[in-house]
Length: 164
Image (cartoon, one colour):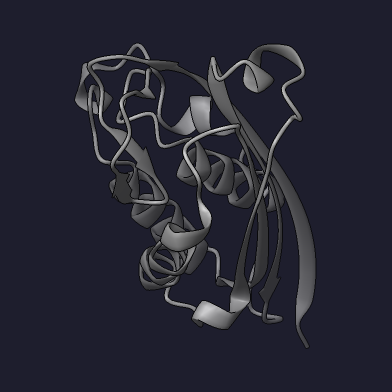
């Protein structure tokens, strides 16, 4: 019998000049990129956080601390793949992931299919199990002024009766 668990993830990073804009493992042509210890992929960080939370393993900062130099400028797809390994160990699989990227720019829609392909590949699930939406802040607040990008994610994972 399967057991289901829900997770919620959130991440936010400032947009700065001189960094590549990487979201969902996709390099997006844009004049600014996300600042952070790793590649600052806010979408993948929020997904990791949601999955880690659903498994009851704390949060992304506990598994991948930003004061550890081995994670400096790391490709966040590697972090997501490491989260998947933990899921495998604990006998969890993705049921679905629903993500909302919140930014004024860049425009996300034409990149969202490749993001879904990357995520489903890293989590060994169907592309149909991943949903990505983009919303603006209607020019309100720091995100509305184009100062950063935030992401919220909910996930549902399932396991078999052999899991912990």
